[in-house]
Image (cartoon, rainbow, N blue to C red; front, side, top):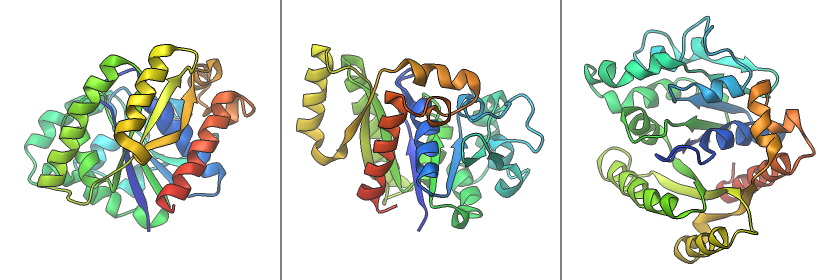
Length: 256
């Protein structure tokens, strides 16, 4: 069965898109059929996958949400990444207004993914850094939520609000929505605050806190400018290794 995972955190700069792109590539390298869905108007996951967000020949995720084209027609191959992509660009900024006019607007993405899900083992959805209708669509269509989290005080505060939103989605439109895990990003074990926050997360979330932590790594920061995931840009780097380990952990935890 296809596993649909929404990567979300309303706080920007926590490594959400970095995790979406590099986890997709790591899963693909382990022979999983992967679709990455870019639901962020910034289109960073699209660019980081080697696709020019300014030149989407067949349209993108907004067109799919509005049922103007099929998901199958919008999906593109990412030969330098190893997975397929439903791309996005700045057009998605209009989604809030456009979706308001649609009946069942929270299920637009769910209906679109349903038409192609059987082609993939894993669908990863890169959400915008806000709790808006695009994020609601992602959470409505997902089986689980993966939360990238930087180990700092403000991140913990935002996590509480995010978990409240997940609970609201469960209560209203997606009762089966699970917490697939929390992944620590930009992790530096030499930092005492990082260690303290990590311990708090472990004490509170137990097995929901994934064992794999993604370190601060310059190669991870450089890879997007080359339109490559880190395992294609710097295969032997610490960042590439960490995402391979994370992919294997998720495969075991979720039986992917």
